[in-house]
Image 1: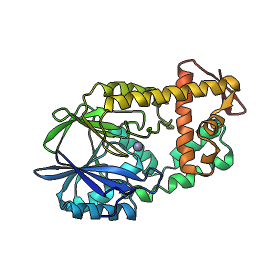
Image 2: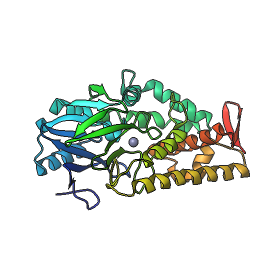
Image 3: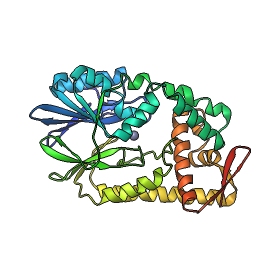
Image 4: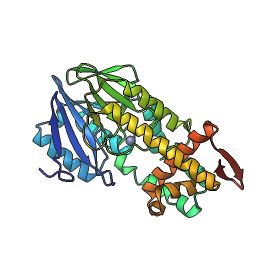
Length: 333
Ligand SMILES: [Zn+2]
């Protein structure tokens, strides 16, 4: 069976969980979907991005593991990012399954891919980046980039809401939904106390750091929310974590501490840069992530929003100041 980066298309884990590596046309290479078997069939967690390559991978993985579309009764989404959410509507049409996600996640999906086609969101994002010093020619690359996702998340699913504190029955176990904000507002992780397993979406990833992004229209405390969520998650006893990217892993609590330390170092770097000279958010972004992200709208958006999440965090704590002149914001120590 052809896989990704020399890995199999799917891996069966003990306890009735099948990890399906769904290909992505990004440097992330794949997103993990999970099939959890029970007496009625399967729950499918995070089906992937809607591309021909992803659909072909699904058909191969399902044939290999003898899963029919009709066997999938529930589709569960940890969060609304297109690489997780994109195939939900396509699967729902083929299976008739219920699609479950949090109301907050769904609201974000509607802002990006709802009735206005994301026009208001794109305009807010462009205005935000421009105020933080992004040149007009770079801002102009955002809208085509955002629009390029519409086909990859269509058709939109009909969804039912679940919220933190509820449990979802999967693979014969009760999985507690845990609010996990910071990477994506409204993201949910799912914890099975009986087997000490955590389905953690993109909140805790084993060898890469989840993107923490300022999002227009949200509270702009994404990094503080993320760090608080890491502390909360670290209290769960986890023997095996099933992440949205890379491979299932142990040492879950240690990984939450490593991620927190990563952000502490980045905050220190920003303060050090601002000690040298006042900078706009865009200038900081280029200094942190390198000029190489210029010209790549996808990486630029992640890098810029991540930079702003750190800058806002420092500003809320009074560790840096800001001044605004000619509709440009710059920061200083
Ligand atoms: Zn994500």
